[in-house]
Amino acid sequence: MKQVFADTFYWVALLNPRDDLHQEVFRFSQTITNLRRVTTEEVLIEVLNFFSNYDSLVKQKVLRFTRRISNELSIHIIPQTHASFRSGLELYERRLDKGYSLTDCISMQTMKELKITDILTHDRHFAQEGFNILFSK
Image (cartoon, rainbow, N blue to C red; front, side, top):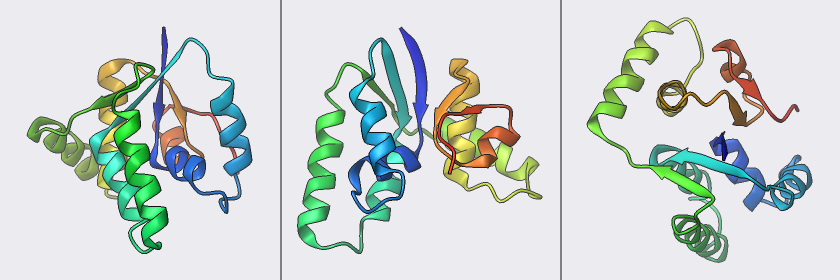
């Protein structure tokens, strides 16, 4: 089964009907067959952080969603480890001239390790590192 990395952008756009790309991401998600989405716990932390200032109903929806996807076979969540933190930190240090977040660096290192080239994002930083971004804004 082909693997694709799911960035924070993807999950936020999927969960947020007010997001400019919500409809595009939602339609894409409805057509996924033979595609395994891979993400990290660090990405899911960013998703939960993104919604932290929303009302409690939205936060409950996001929390339920996060718990539900952890049980889906078509989604693989890579646990955070000290090794993934250090690996991301090393890339962050090598790219001080870029605007990469630490979470993006961890994601990039994870993708390289798993030989994943396609990413569900519109973040051009991933293209700068040679990855194929699947959404454009």
